[in-house]
Each structure stands twice: as structure tokens, then as C-alpha cells.
Amino acid sequence: QVHLVESGGGLVQAGGSLRLSCAASGRISTINAMGWYRQAPGKQRELVASITSSGRTNYADSVKGRFAISRDNAKNTVYLQMNSLKPEDTAVYYCNADGRYWSTTYSLPFNSWGQGIQVTVSS
Image 1 (spheres, helix red, strand yellow):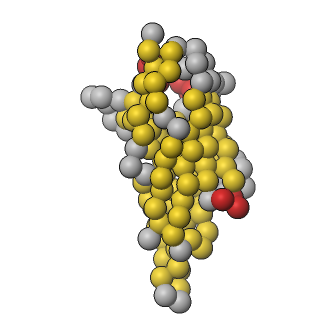
Image 2: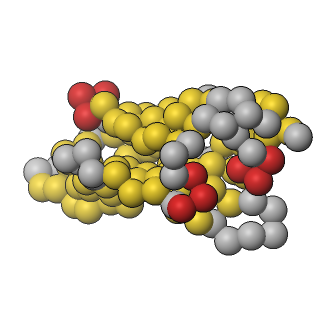
């Protein structure tokens, strides 16, 4: 299986910045898309940003121009640079990745989630 571990969350004032990281580990064959989702209290989980293996990105309208997603394929790591943070960005942020992993002699698909990391933006 493939495990994802997030880091970099915390408390920041409005207008500040944070950088989230998510590292994938395990018997990874390939990773296709990697992305960040968030879930605020009482709300559904929503896509924040995603990036394909070739670097194509997609952003939620609410974060365009403020957040930037990137990845280091050699390190199986995805990043989310969050600038100009707003109180409404407060949520638990989850990393997601899909691809294939090695099981004995053949590969199988995976879709894994991180454990989530808290981001709190104070006004």
C-alpha cells in the first residue's frame, strides 16, 4: 500500500502564508494525480488543487491566484504554497494521490489519503 504523510500546517494570521507538504511512501510504481482537499467544520470535503504527473494543475476558484500546487516526482512529494490566507481557508487539509503500487510481481491501483492537517487562519 501507499502511505501519505502531511506536514506544514498550523496557525497563521490573515494575510499570512503557509506551505504544506505531503510525502508518499511504499512500494510505489507510478503516481498519477496528486491533490489537496480541505474540509471545514460542518462542510463537505472539497478539492483545493490538483496536479498531474506531467504538471498540469487545477484550482478551486476560491484559491486561484493565492495558492500554488507543485510536486517533486523524484521525492514522491506534493506541495501547496498558500499565500494571502483568509479566515475562510481554515480547515483540515488532506493530501490525496492515485497511481499504482507493486504487490509481489505485479502492480495494482491505489488511491490514498493522508491523515489530514489543521490549518487555522485568524482574523
